[in-house]
Every structure is written in C-alpha cells, then in structure tokens.
Image (cartoon, rainbow, N blue to C red; front, side, top):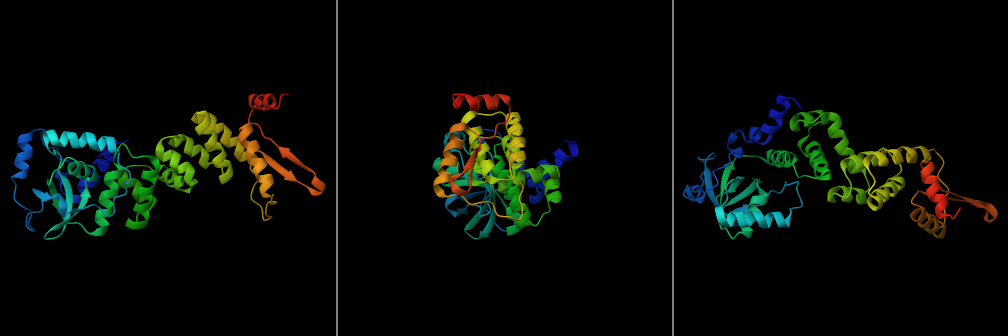
Length: 308
C-alpha cells in the first residue's frame, strides 16, 4: 500500500469531521481526566473543544454498523476507566439542548456506563444524517477486529445509503476495487456460511473458495467439510474446482424432482461418505447412486468405507 493510500485511510474519519482532534489521545493520567471534567458545558458556539456530557443525554448512533461487542473486552475497558478515567473522548452531534447522538466511540460509551460514570468527555460536531452514517462506517471499516461479514455489510451500506460506487468506495477506504468486490460477494453466501465466517470458524480464504461454486447446495456441503475436518484453504480451493466441474450447468430444463424419502437417503449418504451424493430414480424402480471423488486418495477413502 502506498504512503498516499495509507494517508487516505488514516484521514478518513478526521477528514469528515474536518478536525484532527478526533485522533487525539490524552495522556493516561487521572489528573487529565479531572481537567476534562472541569471544562464548561457545550454550547452552540463552541463545537471544537472537549465538553462534559451526561450519559443519560447521549443516544447511540442509529447508523452504527457494528452489532456485536465483546463483553469480556468491555469489562476490561470498564475496569480501566474506573481506575484511570476515560482517556479518549467520544464524538457526538448535538440534537437539541439536552440530547446528543453518538458519532463514534460506542465501545467507550458502553464501558463508561458499566464503570458507573454519569458524565463523559466528548467532542461535539455538526453532522447531517448522511455524514453520521459515513463517519460511523469509515470508523468501523478502519478497525482491525472487524470480521469479513461486518466489513462487507459496511461496504454495502456505503454503496446503498451514501451512494458511492465501488471504485469511489475503494478510494475512500484505501482498498482496490477487486478487494471491495470480493467482500461484497460474501453477502451472496448462504446465511450458515456467513455465520461461520463471522464467528471465525472459516477464514476469508475459505469463503473466497466457496464463492467460486455456483450451486448453494455444493457450497453448504463444502462448508460442512471445512468445519468438520479443518481443511486448509488450498485443499478447499482444490475441492471447489472439482465440485464446480461436477455441478450440472444450468439449462432451460428443470432438474428432475425426487421424493422426500429419496432426498433424505441422499443427504444421509452424503454425510456418511463426506462428499456430494446424487441419486437418480428412473422408471420401474431402477436408478443409480453417484458418489464423486476428488482424487485417488479420496476414492480409496470411499472404497474403504464400502469395505472394498
């Protein structure tokens, strides 16, 4: 990444706020916390200084893209705040004389409530709804602990609600257009796979390999193998190529329907052999069972299970 690109990413939120103070970290001392508390109440003419605001007057950001917060990490931060006070002020916008909306710093806000604070130091900014959304999204995208699905959802909201094109979004967050596209494609995966990616059961590399398969059933099958067997990304890429090759191409004709009982047997066999199984039912009770394998070793594994 070039120095210019890094600067764009680093300037993201502060450029929107038009003030570098959002990135200021105050010295880690109780004395400085007391000095913050001594500052005057906010007023309309003083929108760049740190002000002390009652927690009860602060609403959470309605545009916050982050939905999950680590409870253990929140408790640790709350313990730190109890001992040393809040070092980094939050950022809010003023709604009326006694109401504010959070722009950034929800984790600090939550931890401060746990710590029992009644007031909190904050920067007060002027921002409309679109700016609020963009600030929140950029702040979250810049975080290091976001999972790929959260990043993808943030990218999609930037496109849908801020009106950015993929190339513009890439410039704004210092990522290439192909990278942005790869993240957005994650949102087309079945919910179960997205949940595993969100929880860290599979990696972005696994997900990118799964996406190359067009058939959702095959995607879910491969996802199950990853979770149960702990497959490497390289192995998953190999399996994905084989599955995509074996997946029938979509044609105008509808696939033959099978009964619930046959579908159940097909799924049970797939689970037993660890590969996709297809049962074809013909007339007169005739049919065939297809058990594909991915390599000579995989064939040996299946034959061994059949006591061959």
